[in-house]
Image 1: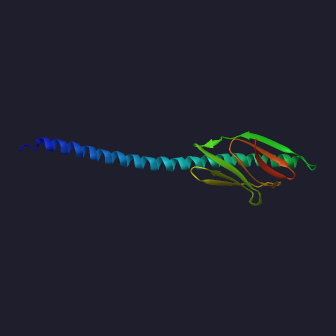
Image 2: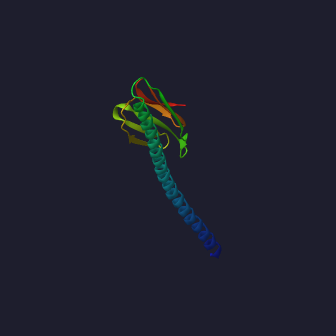
Image 3: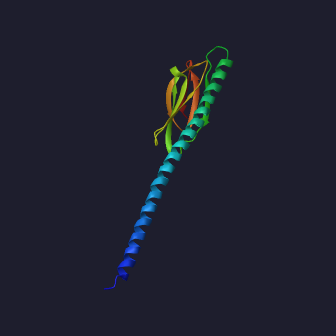
Length: 145
């Protein structure tokens, strides 16, 4: 009996099995790396947008303080990205704690930015996109524009 044909088939099968295991291992490790990197990018983008919203709130607060009485109305409109790294997000004002909170949908991450304003801040939530910072009725709020 000749075993040379069995040896070739066995060698080919073992080579395919080992290659499949190596490729599968690389794909799994690579996908974990991509997911970790995506979360990092989402967190960084939310932090940048949060700083920009806080800047708009501070600017509106300065305009209100410059009005020196009366009942001023301030409206600032800015366009932010509708999505960060492919994920939708929400911007929330937490007036009692003087904080802007941003929360992404997928992956579920949140970032907060503290802000000090002389004017009272309301509690409001909007989605990303065009955001309007307003001062009406004695408090700062955000709305979708």
